[in-house]
Image (cartoon, rainbow over all chains, first blue to last red; front, side):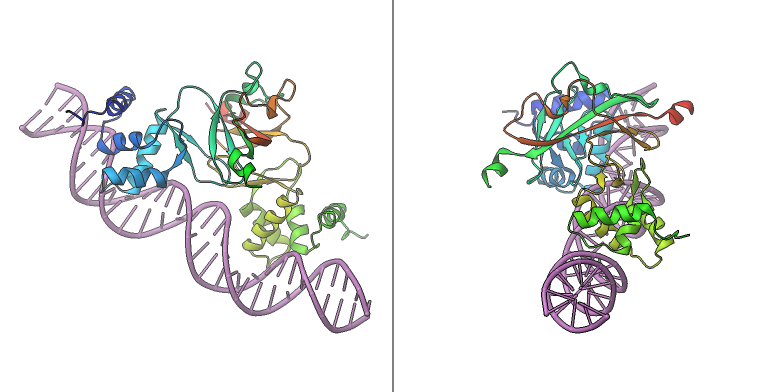
Length: 146
Length: 146
DNA sequence: GCAGTTGTTTTGAGTTACTCAAAACAACTG
DNA sequence: CAGTTGTTTTGAGTAACTCAAAACAACTGC
């Protein structure tokens, strides 16, 4: 039945090789632990990884996350007030909507208008590389609770 | 000479009373410790406050900062990778430019165009309250070092 | 101007989310 | 398949807060 050769593992391995990183079990497990569209923290990733690979340490998870986000395979976001979150949607510069009540995070495409994202009104001599936009508000569920 | 009656203390006291907060020495000292245009962390504020009010505890500084930013007297920003910073420029919704090399932070007016800040392309049912924009890049000093 | 109430500050401990370093180990290279 | 180099493990350590109880100080009304 060959159930062992999951397609995402192949994809992950390719990403790793492309970045010049060694293909290891913990790295494949971390990559596999993050579903598309999710935003999860190191602790939750660790929990999922250890289900599959029981003697992986939390430090390894941190190391893998640093390697993968450094290589651009994962994206790390750090919303104010919560631990760092990781997502596997990369390549596009999308932004985030964060619920001020439950901390839920969802992706949102670039701001409307012609990419104003990269144009502050005055640059103060900075050489700007990226713009990060975070929208704060109440998610549908939390609105319903009031 | 009446040097004791600094004008910023009066202003700070007025802000506090307006917010229904008691006027105390630590609060005035914390407010006075942050210069206009600065972005400093709790530790640096603590260092400055203790110069003037030696037996203030760090916990008090945290408490004061929470009270003042909660009341809108100070603004708290939390750039990824550094401790929370506080600034006393409030009321306008300006954004920040952060140096990826030395972590310097400067203010920047709202994004160009007609306030696209509050309009993500899809809201996903969120009731959006604020938009936060952070520009990342190299500050003039760090560019000069390369 | 003073007592009472309520909000602040102090003191002390505890926690979360990481980070660092050394030694054991496992991937890729030739 | 041996060697090299990058990873992972193990273990310790830290920064930046947060919580709780007791001591204290601001404002209120008398």
